Amino acid sequence: MRTAQIMDSDGYAIGKIICIGRNYAEHIRELGNETPEAPVIFIKPASSVIGEGETIVIPEYSRDCHHEAELALLIGTGGKNIPIEKALEHVAGYGVAIDLTLRDVQADLKKKGLPWEIAKGFDTACPLSRFTPAERVPDPQNLRIVLSVNGEIRQDGNTSMMIHSIPAIISHMSGIFTLEPGDVILTGTPSGVSQIVSGDSLTADIPGVATLTVTVG
Ligand code: MG
Image (cartoon, rainbow, N blue to C red):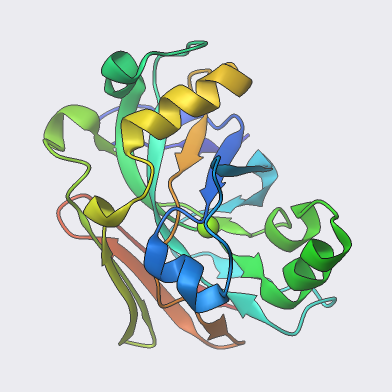
């Protein structure tokens, strides 16, 4: 079983990975999506996680895999219907993830009104860094997120640009899914998503918090 590694501790077995879509206005614009009234939520299975130095395998049924760099939250204390004011107390650590998305497959599923799992939950679809303990991240709502491909910056955003704040996301999600220790929350991606191809090296970086490098097989 994969574990979420926290600096200076043994970490947690990874549970469900709950993701929010369309949480940065610029990214909604670049894909031509409408801004949803309620957050768009989906889940990746724990089996989709890979770690530092591992290899992304793009499924054969796609010709267009995109990177989405995102702040990742590791839940340390579970809960149901968590109030916004208490939400950050449930976070054990902060890291960076890449929400890999088969954009061509997702576009087809969206058109047909079908669920997204095969576009976002395939093996290797969730590269995930180690986590920095929450007490060392004084303001998670003001963190730079950078994603480079082969050394060239493609995404450069800041968590201050989120539509739904981190506490609001945790509170909302915990009303639908009981949160358990080891669950991971992905908080959405800033603009600049683009295609990756075989041989690419991706580095996702939240300076001072987490960094992650993976390659495309
Ligand atoms: Mg995403």
